[in-house]
Image (cartoon, rainbow, N blue to C red; front, side, top):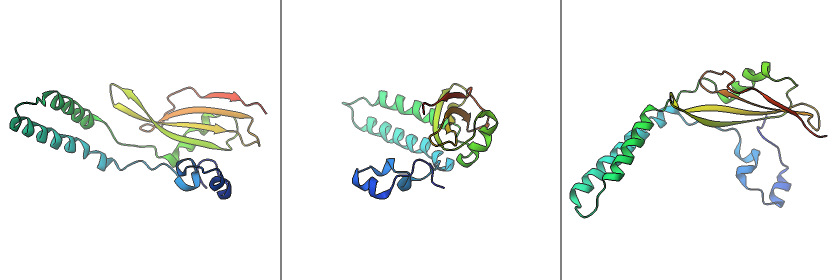
Length: 161
């Protein structure tokens, strides 16, 4: 199964559809490996050290504001929690009890909410359409990628046929 809307290849080529809008070209969103994300604070720290060394060598330019900003960014990157407990393929299973209509088509996107406790909280935002053709109902729901709990009340609306 391909996520997203399937577009005939000839139509996509004829209309010059960009690859990033063609679900056949892009496929599912893949969450980057959290181990790779843990390297970012170290990279920023190396840049801070290089900036500090440069500021000691060059007297006529002050790099102090840059060092302060980069230090703040490095601290933020250290405290960002990058653990996902709910993967994209598990999202539909977690929301089925909260959807009042049948599930036909759906779209899942990863977004982030800023919270003081976890700084950036990953959230799966799901738009679910009913199975009819054309769909009669649409529901939008968000669940936490950490806990799998629904964090917003499902919003369901009737679509005009």
